Length: 388
Image 1 (cartoon, rainbow, N blue to C red):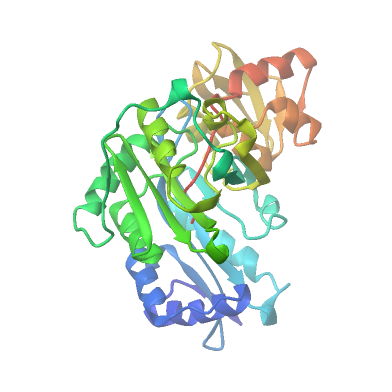
Image 2 (cartoon, one colour):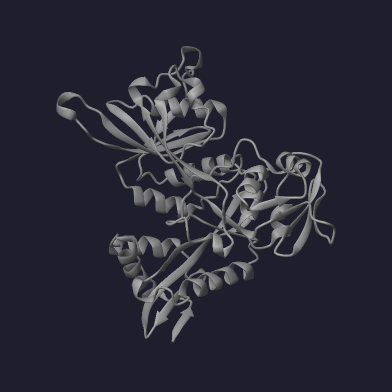
């Protein structure tokens, strides 16, 4: 019989070995120890068959920035897998149920995840709330328009071994994530993990109001250098920091292309460049999936675009949602929403009109659907750069 239980350290080490087989990446002993320093084992569950770990799932405690700037306590589900020998035996469902129950007991109203496969999690109640945009910048064409060239900015590179780096990043990240709907907090142990994981070849560039980080892979190209720069972070709490950090990234010597997975869908950089096509979108993909566990608590945490209110029904329950707050009602529903559409609706990055066209939402009339767009949509669009 397969047992679902909270792991001890030996269970978790065994789980990392199975995870490596499932995802095709072997974990080193050093990586396992870094993960153990980051996670809380009491938030994890393993599936055990005859003393052997055959699957796992767990969560991280996060705060998600909501429309209006409030934070919502969120269980970030991660490390989810089942070994190939135990597929289609209900193991994944039992693991997800156990992790969701733990999130509920911790009074975290929202569950979130980033998915390795997009076809798995809608059936559990998750829906895509933010988009990952993969971009490439041709540095030779990425020149600022002269009138937008930044004035001399206070920028400095901090070595990854500098003990001050952690605190400097933490302060800047906290200011940035408060301004970005859809972003997650990064506690100091999370930032410490990032610094260690990325290693000494990563550049950390700090501005008084933000920071950027990247790594360069050399490509000397027989005397015609065209290095590849991978941009990990560009977190700016002010417009001035945004311009200064981008200008610095675009000025790194010997670089041919700049690749990134953290550029927002509505990033304003192209408007600052002589050639807007220097920034090219390579791919758009799902990133943050959300599953409101406590619907009223989730929707009461955000603000709305109008003074309107609408009655929303999901799974047979109805709430009046809008500027007046959230409360359970029995009134006729204006919107009927599939459970997996509540997450996108919550963060405001997907229009109710789009959800209706995608058969995840049904409005009583076109006029109500238009009101829903004005009520729920968020600008700038929600965006997440913190993977987990």
